[in-house]
Image (tube, rainbow, N blue to C red; front, side, top):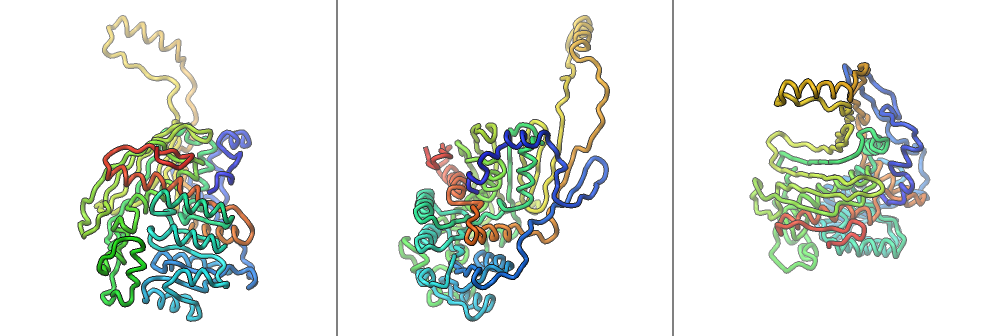
Length: 466
C-alpha cells in the first residue's frame, strides 16, 4: 500500500472522527455467540458484476508459469475484465499446460522478451523465481506494461531499489503480490486498532508453521525433465554454469541461489500485513537465528527461523517489539497467525477470522503486605482504603469479539481487482514498490542476520542497511 493511500488517516485522526471506540462496527449481519463472546460475519467487498466490454479487458501475459503463476491467472480470470493472451516459462510442459488450462490460442514462449514485445499484452503477472524478479519487472515497466509482481519484490535489496526507480521513472503501475493487504479481515483489524480497541500497542508476533513435504517445498519433479525441455542456461541467469539439476529447477526455494529462504518467502507476508494495519515503515533493528533442523535433502535454506524486530515510535504507532517464526517440521500440525498486543487487549487474526479480546487493568494495585508486621499491615490497610475507596461493581461486558470472512472468501481475488482498477481507473495500488521493499527488506535481512550471526540496523525510511 502506498503511504499516500492513508494520508491523514492515522490513529489520532481516526479517533477524532469516530468520537469513541466501537468494537461492534461491522459491515454485515452478526451472530450472537455464547457467554462472554460475540461473533460477526463480515460482508465481502462488492465488485462490478456487469459484463465488461472487450475494449475494457486487460490482456495479461504470464512470466513464470509454475503453480503460483498459473494460480494467479486462474484467480484473475474469475473477473470478466481479465483475459490471458500469452505465457512464458522455461519448461515445455508448463507451456503446454497453460494452453490446456487457459486456451489453445494463447501465445507461449521461453523468451520473456518476446512476450513483452507483443502489442496485445496490456499487463503482466510476474511469478518467476526470486532471482529473476528484478529484470522481468524492470523490462515490463519500461515496455509500459503494468506489473503484478509476486512477493518478495526482489531477491536482493539493491535490486528492489532498481525496480522502484523504474516504477517511478516510467509511471507504470506496479503491485506486489502479497494478497493479505487486500483482505477484508486485515482491513477490520486495522479499523479496530485505529479505534484504540487494544489500547497502546507494545508487542506483535506472527508465525507460519508447516507440517507437510509440499509445505516444506518438496515439490514434484517430473522424471522426464531434462536439459532438452528445460532452458537451464537461461534459468541460471548470471550464475556460474553447472550441469542440469532438476532439484534446483523444481525445488528452487530450497536454494539461496534462486530464492530468499523461509523469511523472504513467508516473513514477508507477515510484515506486509502488519505494516498495512499499522501504517508502519518497518523495524530499525533486526535479529534472527535458526537452522536446518529436519529437511536435510540437499537444500541450503534453513527450515526453522526465528526473528526479533524493534520498531521505533512514529506518528502512527508507538515503539513496539515483534517476534516472527517459521517452522517447516512443526509436529503440532502447523498453522499461521498474527497477534497484536496492547495495554487494553489483543487482536489475533489469520486468513479468515480475527478475535478481539479486551481487558481492563484494575484501578487498584492490590496489596502485598504479608511480610509486614501486624502494626504496619493495619497502617497500610487504612492507607489503602483511603487511597482506593470501595466502588460499585461494573457491569461485565463481553470481552471477546470474533469477526469472520464469508465462506469461500479469496483475498487474492481482491488483490487482483486492485491491480485491474489501477490499470483501468488509475486507482492507487495497495502495495507499490516502496511498500514492497519496506516489507521485504527486513525479511531478507533476517536471513543475513541468521547466517552472519549478528544484529542488523535498518533505515526503514531510506530502506538501506546502516
